[in-house]
Image (cartoon, rainbow, N blue to C red; front, side):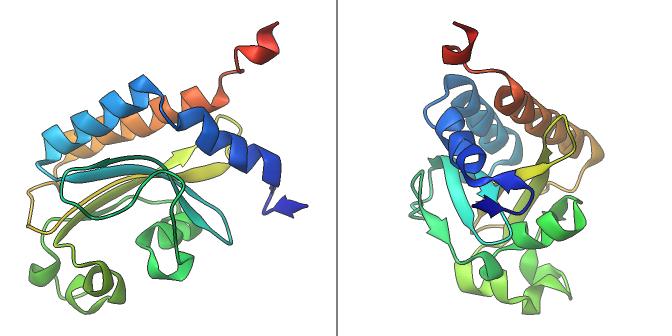
Amino acid sequence: MRLGNIPMQSKATGCVTLAGNPRVAEILARVCDLTGMGFAAVAQVTEQTWTACHVLDQIEFGLDPGDELDLKTTICNEIREHGQPVVIDSVSGDAYWRTHPTPILYGFESYISLPITLSDGRFFGTLCAIDPGPAKIDMPELIATIRGFAAEIAAILDAPSRDSLG
């Protein structure tokens, strides 16, 4: 069975590859430090599922690695469709986002999410952060830094496993 263009096994392997990876943990901590936000995650996003692969939760949002959200309730699904970052400093201060169902459902005020794209061009998921308070995050330098982190996560996913190296 296949999910989208990626075999189901590859999708599961992606989350396993990232779960517990110390560099991914460092990246999530750095994202929280740079943004001032309390929750960061790497999510695997397919046409059917949103799955948390690695999580740093300092705000008791309540997600753990392996947890799934209803795909249609996520902004990450929109990113999967259009491939562009989404950055929101203040949901309540933005005419579009203040009435969008996702921030209302999950109760966040600030949000940033960038696509994780593998070297062969396939979309894996997102590197995202949220917080219940506003955050000044819509800055080109900050977005570029987080884009670099997303690329580093993609490189981790692209790297052959140690087991396959013999």
